Image 1 (cartoon, rainbow, N blue to C red):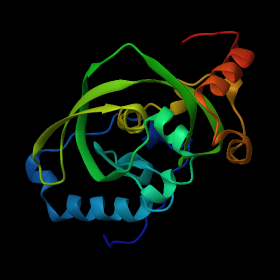
Image 2 (spheres, rainbow, N blue to C red; image 1 turned 60 degrees about the vertical axis):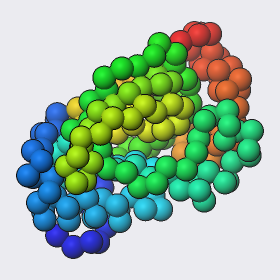
Image 3 (cartoon, rainbow, N blue to C red; image 1 turned 120 degrees about the horizontal axis):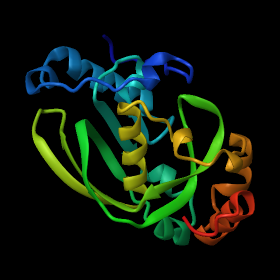
Length: 204
């Protein structure tokens, strides 16, 4: 495997609905998995903030996340703070498990590199704690809030055969162009109002 970008699997392919296989420490440290991680990093760069191995054709419990300052700086400061969105250096999550979560949910649009048709408002838990192995096979635990927690839930979903459309309300779907034109800078109040208009549910 080279360090070139991989093709991204699109919705409809069975691998996206499979529970991915966990890896042993020896497997994590193997040249094959190390090469896959680097190829996933190349594939993700410039395309999004998270990628799971099933999305590039490997049914393995590996996800990578990177939220670069140049993405975040496109947003007004007040929106960055409201969404709790801060730069995330490249990180690898292998065999991740959510071990704790709060009860507060946040609403925002999500899209997916494997689903090119549109975005939907997707409720996500605000604060989660995750245990996982890093790319060196070392056991780790982190607590993530806000945007980081959202990305983690999206990618862990992929590793368990779940897509964001399974937890999002289809009545809130918009095109990706509409999202970029009208909603990328929207605040929480506006998102909540749109959600209520489309679903009739004022709270989640």
